[in-house]
Amino acid sequence: MALAAGLLLPLLAGVPAIAQTVKQVPSSREDIQYSFAPLVKKVGPAVVNIYARAEVTERRVSPLFDDPFFRRFFGDVFPGETRKRTAQSLGSGVIMRADGLVVTNAHVIKGADEITVVLADRREFDAKILIQDERTDLAVLKFETDGENLPFLEIRDSDELEVGDIVLAIGNPFGVGQTVTSGIISALARTALGITDYSFFIQTDAAINPGNSGGALISMDGKLVGVNTAIFSNQRGSGAGSVGIGFAVPSNMVRTILEGVDKGAIVRPWLGVSGQTMTTALAEQFGLPRPVGVAVTDVYPDGPAANAGIRVGDIILKISGREIVDEQALRYRVATRPLESIAEIEILRRGELQTVKVPMRPPLAKPEPDVRDMQGQHPLAGARVANLSPAFALEQGLDDMARGVVILKVARQSPAARIGLRPGDVVIEVNGTKIELVATLEQAMLAGQHAWRISIRREGQVLTTEVKG
Figure 1 (cartoon, rainbow, N blue to C red):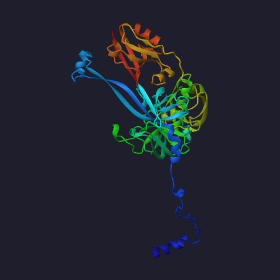
Figure 2 (cartoon, rainbow, N blue to C red):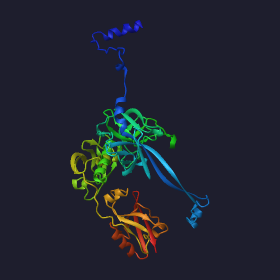
Figure 3 (cartoon, one colour):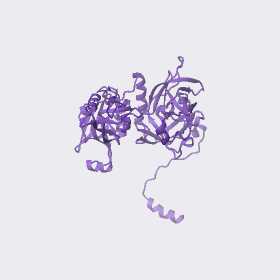
């Protein structure tokens, strides 16, 4: 050790002394106390437990009657024995207004006939569903407080968060009662998880388990930054537990759902474009230093993007200063913008950066749906069809960029069922006639006489079949 010290001293000669923090032994309780108790005491009463009950009818039949070969000839002639049972689920929720307005996950109350909200002080209230939005996996409940003002949480802008920020997760895991866990934000803008249509999540390592769904993710200022929604686990079913990877819907999306309560319906801005997430290969082709942005592949005619001048081939890089990493991020950034506001969209066009101002409008509602049940002596008889518009498509959970006539329902053993049509198929052409409206489709089918060549679009592919009468 003496030799080592002798070697170090000459290397440090002439170097100014480095100030060091003087370490001291804690001299009081306050010096060593580190607790979230004041924060939990403040926000805990605003987090509730939710119990949902549904009456489920089950049918028990002999395995013989469930055999596909048997059912082909006899169908449902032997219904078997039916019985009813009550299915229960539990989750968590967050009081967002003093009059008993609660936000939770849509999957917590899905199919529920009765919903009970249990406060932190163990009082129970019957609740009704105001909004159930499966696209975001969020729901809004309401229960009567008889004029009492309840504690509630304020919303914080989730775009202000940074990786490493400390957060608390409050909920009812496994039904054990209100539980608080702490952690940090592990990642922001997690996309492509397949949990909701607007796949854009806050990732945290705060322990989240089954039953935490719908609970609050809280920042250190006591405000809501997310609603806990899902976990990553190597197990399935009731044995699934936290492995330190949990996901929460950002509070900015929660805000849009609450605005829907005031307006009577959820109406989100709609851009009217679809695109492809930038890959490394595409980035090289477009001269980008790294794969970021969305390449526009389709622009809806007369939509906000089209009217603002966005074209196929443009690369959308930012919306109102927020970077767009993929198509899911693009959908989220548009959906959380205020209606009627102006979004500044930064695009790359032929190697040049441009900024386009796009008004945030609701989805187009034209043409009218004109829902009809197809009848007659032709292959589409038994199909329920409708005109597609962006608004109608979003309402039905379909592609908002699709144009044409969509199949909504197919009657069993009908001509439409026999040729293999499914709900969601879009009829685009019949015997060379382009199909844009239901009226055109009816005329084309009746004019076909004894032969029809029908083209449909299904899951991005065009399928064509020929049918002879």
